[in-house]
Amino acid sequence: MELHNQAASARVAVINADVLSLGTTFLSLADIWAVWPIAAGIGVLTLAWLKARIILSQYLGLAAAPFWMRGFEFALAALCLLFLGLYLLPVIL
Image 1 (cartoon, rainbow, N blue to C red):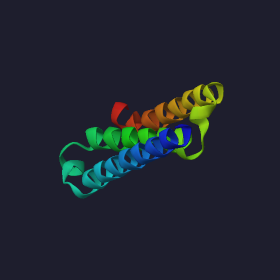
Image 2: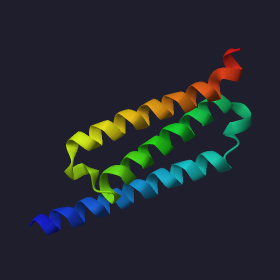
Image 3: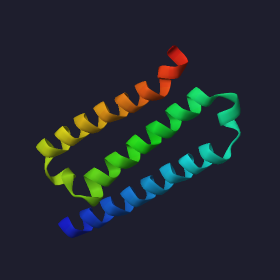
Image 4: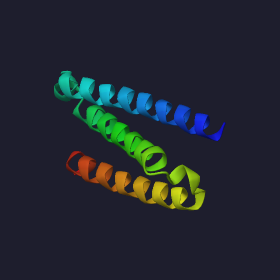
């Protein structure tokens, strides 16, 4: 039963990662960068953050260690907020 749950969880993670990759591809191919560059940048950064969470939790197995998962999620969120701030800095100034 446990092995079946792990396999199902891995399949869901792969499907989620594929959907997020398609979203990133769509944003990179669309002309949204010319019309709404800030929204496109935020969208790509958000998709990258979600994909990184899937990689950490499912592929690296941090879902089995909630304490470490929370630490990595906090550090990842802080890093993404830093990247977002650096991306938006030229717009603000």
